[in-house]
Image (tube, rainbow, N blue to C red; front, side, top):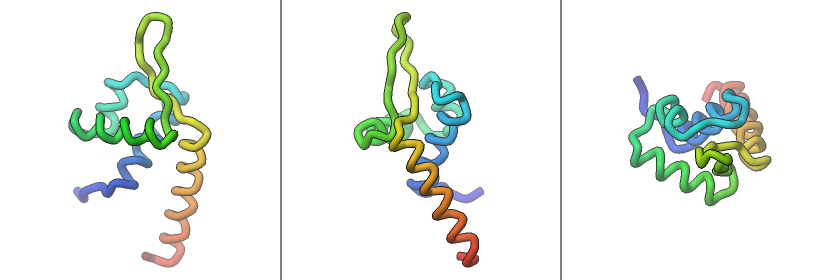
Length: 90
């Protein structure tokens, strides 16, 4: 098993949110992302600060994470970069 780099982790978090209908509770996202709570909180703070993810609270006080337009754009660009790298066998 190889270690994921920072961009792979960000991609994984954003992909998980997208795969769950662009709305997911923190605990399932933490589990699916396979990060420690400390690392998860650090990544989520950064993603919110950079405008890739939005934290929303519903009328019952539950927090959800959703992607912003910028988050969707990141996933699109990341996929293009991966395809480019694979095309050249790098």
